Image (cartoon, rainbow, N blue to C red; front, side):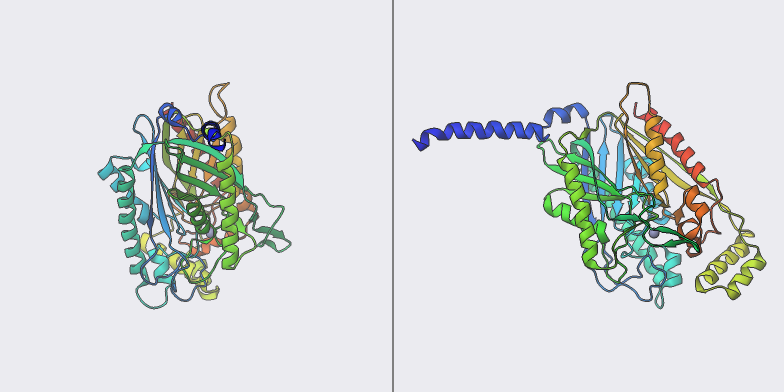
Length: 475
Ligand SMILES: [Zn+2]
C-alpha cells in the first residue's frame, strides 16, 4: 500500500518545488531572455606576500605582522543587450589612488576597448591593509624603503586586477539582476558636538544611513553568481598590525561561505563620518561582519525584489574643488617651528610645494561617476571619504528629478570612497561645524587646508549633470 502512494507524493513534491522556484525567482530563464544582461564575477587575493607598512592611523610605528585572513580585489562585470559594459572593482584597501586606477583604466581601454568611464573602483577603507601611497609610506615608515615597497605593490596590484578583468570578461554569461535592501544597525555618527567643538565620539542623534543596498546577480539556473552590497560606515573596528578586511572582509567571507559559487563584493557607502560601534576587537569585527552579512541575507530573501531591466548609461567627469587660501610662507615657517609633529610635517610639505611650483595649488579636480541601469537603478560613485549627508541628499534629489511622469522612481545607490580617495569630502554642514572630517584631517594630506563653502554644491551639481547624461545614455 505504501508503495502505491509514492508517485503521487513525488508529483506533489515536484509541483511544490516548481511553485516555490517560480516564487523565489529560481526559474528565471524567461526573465534572463527578456532583460538581456550578461555578467561574470572573479575574486583575486591581494594580500601582500611580505610585511608592509600599513594604511590608516598616523601613529603606526612598525610594519605588518601576518594576517587574520586574506585581502581581496573582486571584479564584477555587467553587460547590457547592446554590449555596453560596466566594470566594478571592489577592494579590501584603504583607498583608491590615481597611481592604482590610471594604469588599470588605460589597460581597459587598450586591451579590452572599454572606456575608462566604465570602470568603478571602490575601496572598503579597511585600516588593516597595505599603505599604497608611496609618499605616505616613505614619510611614516621607519627604516627600509617603505615608499618603494608601496609603489611596487601598487604596480603589481594593478597588473593583477587587469588580469582578473580579462578573466571576468571571458566568463560573461546570461544573468538576471535584482535589487533589494536590508538594514544593519552598528554604524553610528561619530561627530559629537561639545562646547569645545565637534569631537570623535558616538553621536546617537547624528545623521546615519543604515541601509544595506544589495544587487544580486542570478544565473539562469537560479544560483547566485554575485551579490554586491553597500554600507555607509568606516571599516575600522580594528587597529592592529595584521592584514584583515575588518567587518566588510568578514561579511564577504561569511556570505561566500554560505553561498558556495557566489562572489560577495562590498562597496563602501558615504561612511566618512560614521563609525562601527563598539569597536577595537577582532571579535567585534566578526560580529559587525555577521550583522552586515545577515542584512544582505534578508535582502536576498525579499520576495519581490526590483528586477533591473533596460540598458546601461554611464557618465564620468572631474569636479574641480577649491581649497581655502593657504597659510603664507611666514605662517608655514612658524607652524614648522611650533606645531606638533603632524602640523610640522604638513607645513613642510606645503613649503616644498611652494618651493617647487612657486605657489600652493588651491584647486584640484576629483572624479565623479554615475551608472544608470535602465529606469531602475542609479548608482552614484563619489570620490574621497564621503560623509553621509551626500547619500541622504542625493537619494532624495535624484529620485524626484527622474524622467517623464508615470515612470516609476529608480533606486538611488550612493557609493563613497570611489575612484580617487584623496581625504575627506565634507558636506557644507560638516565643513562649517569643523572638527576632523570638516577641517583638521587635512593635516595628514598634501592638500593646503579645508575646502571652501562651495564644496557640496560643486559636487552635487556635477552629479546632477552626470545623472542626466547617464539617464539619456540608458534610453
Ligand atoms: Zn577614514
